[in-house]
Image (cartoon, rainbow, N blue to C red):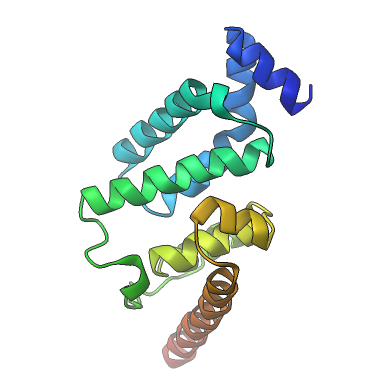
Length: 181
């Protein structure tokens, strides 16, 4: 089913279309929300709120962009607003200082993707948001600009800085691992 059919059916009140919409975009919404909200209960509640808003505002979607971009925009903005409201991010997004968390250890059972996501979680919200959108969700620069409302140069800059900071984290992890041997 294409996006227009899906939207039409959701607007028509089809419960199966609503379930299909949620199933299709659930991973995207969870990615967007989990970059800013760490508490499981808050994250789950906010994801539900995102889908409520998506369904409520779906009539305003005009197909100028992909449906996934529109949904990601809603999820991103709601997550950032939630984080600011809850004072989870104490300073403005532009001024977030880099902080290195606990040493991240990779066990044999741990999946490499999970390890990388743990490293990404150590980045400031603005960096991990654009990095997640670009690498995990596969959005283009123009789509990320639309989702975040940031200029394209800022998006590119944040992705570049995020990669440099990730490199620094990995190098520091490697030094800690070598020091233990």
